[in-house]
Length: 278
Length: 169
Image 1: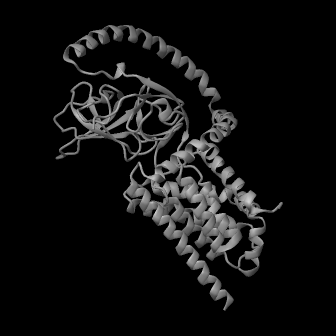
Image 2 (image 1 turned 45 degrees about the vertical axis):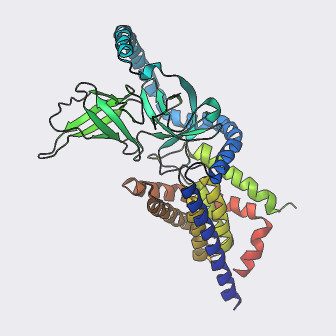
């Protein structure tokens, strides 16, 4: 009898907690962003931020050490390779600067905007979000540093993602490799527009909507298209074409892109102070 | 006073949250990290039965929800069910062999991940794809490895709360 009563009480308790969760879930879902629950969430994140930073400061050399034990030998050859690449890049930059000046003038003449001229906020990547289901990173800058939802995040190499959540001291960025991410892009050679879709960590990004007639080369650069009402400004490098193929009878080519940024080893990024037009 | 769970439980939750967001978030295998907050729910079910397991699961789920991009309450719901389920499954296997909690942690964690993806998909998050199997396996195995520590930790945090349930369960 006692056992019976006990298990009934247990079940009542379970139902109570489950219903509470569902209620919170519903409220958060309906509130969609600016409800009271969202402010609770932001407050909690900001309150936890200093503690997290302190723990991160203690822990990062340790995890960094474990991560780098196996890499030491590679670093020497990588260093030599990077030096060589830097020299090449310097030469390239000089050539590019001239062309860029010319292009800037043309853009100015036509009244177009240019991603390279946007203001940005530098930020440090604190951690990846504590979830296995979304590819996000947490930055150490929030609305106090003028970061806002919807802003693109880049490194010097190219596009990283887009800010999806922001509190006073922290912001969350959805990476371009996340399956929920879609980026409007343009092939550099043909100027053809497509959509680069995320396919998970370490996976190349499939590029959709390129018809079979369009010539596409392996290694061809891909940049954001910045079409009107797009989520990203124009001309931010996204990556290069890795493979191209076309199934017989298909309407579009199967194209895979390599992102130009190493998204698994991000440390510093820039948040572009640019918001998509509503 | 010394065994007062009013002091120990907050310490446990904050330590678990710090561990999850700083250390474990960096230790990823195939992009997947262990889920210590889920493990708190499992350990609660193992050490203190269904009711306390569900309560601990609810609390740890709600806590981690505050730091996730997914809707608030999703982890709370899943972890509540997992804590309760583990508690029911483990009733009567008190003081059993060491591998029972380890296997329970593996099973409970896999169930938690799958349930999370299922309910998340109902809410319109894109969670069920080929990667789900990887997540379930990695979380299951890594949580099983962490299980003995988590069980001791949660057991400690419950302090005097736990003894009253252990007798009657």
